[in-house]
Image (cartoon, rainbow, N blue to C red):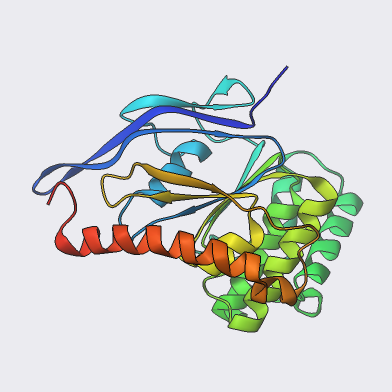
Length: 265
């Protein structure tokens, strides 16, 4: 019986740099349970995106390993859907064909993948733009297409790297709420990288604060807020703000270390 969706064991990573090796991650160990929304916070450069890329199978770690469903990650797979900071859309495909792309690769029939694309484009408010090409869209709209594409492929795990950062504040909050509605229905395992403490607390079951580079696990915090949360009143509640104060304090400690040059600086 698989008890964890993602298990990270003794993970470290070093990049080759112009001034010599640069440690980005150091001895990271985490267990993420099936059906969690797990968010990761930390100062810039602490290795958050590198960690996500290792889970996604795009980078091989220098040491340690990642297990997904008890299988060692050796590369990308259809069980993990990834949304990067960049939109990664195919410029020669329409919005709808971009959303359908993963389903087509998996051999899903034309009618079924078209229905899925329409459903998720409606969800992110872009059905009216289904025949447009990426160059005809704003940056925020492109990211919403990327979100719809990842959801349409129906992976077991969603890996999201700042997926809402390009959106205006109102759309960002609406899509956070939509993400929670999707999670309420599907209980997918979601790992979200963010710089926003508010976003991390609002969407997550647990949030993790990483140290300044090289990134280590500083603390994992349970976000014990009631569900469903797709209600703006949650953001102003006393419980929300108590968690926010605690998490913000941890993040600020590490940002201060990063500004001073970090433990390796």
